[in-house]
Image 1: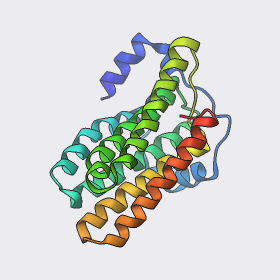
Image 2 (image 1 turned 45 degrees about the horizontal axis):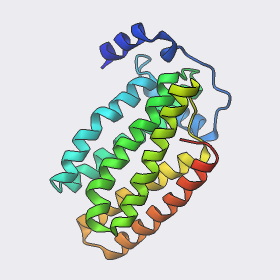
Image 3 (image 1 turned 90 degrees about the horizontal axis):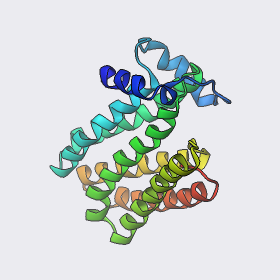
Image 4 (image 1 turned 30 degrees about the vertical axis):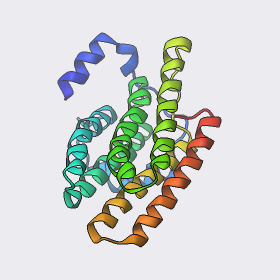
Length: 208
């Protein structure tokens, strides 16, 4: 994985140049004190992002085979790397344009795969279409900004809340299937609905 990143860095050095953080959030400091302090110096935010991308097909396979007992924990671990890579980048001033582009894409691949396998099978089809539709809009807007305007935009607060809501809803869905619990399934559907609302707010406040 490191070799792949180093090769890409040699090809597109501007994408991997470190930038200072404009702002460090309280949760960044909390993670830096509790978790990030134990990470080796060789672990960079980009490695965590690529790890999430690599884990996504494994999560997809586990969900496709209804291995929810393992799938929910691997999904949560992969989703947790989303919090780690951003906080590591901001607290260590290791923000890169690659990370700004790849981080939300990794999130959308992870959540999108779960939506395809869980939402379309267990909820109203229009809920799945709405979730995937907004994710596709975010990806297209990011591509247009990068290709046409040479601009890279970071996720805003609403985008982060949307991602967190989707992770909670997906996890609740898997627990509901494991425990055969209708209440958890209803709760998950409601949180998916909230995530759509946050997606709209993120889209209209120019987030990703």
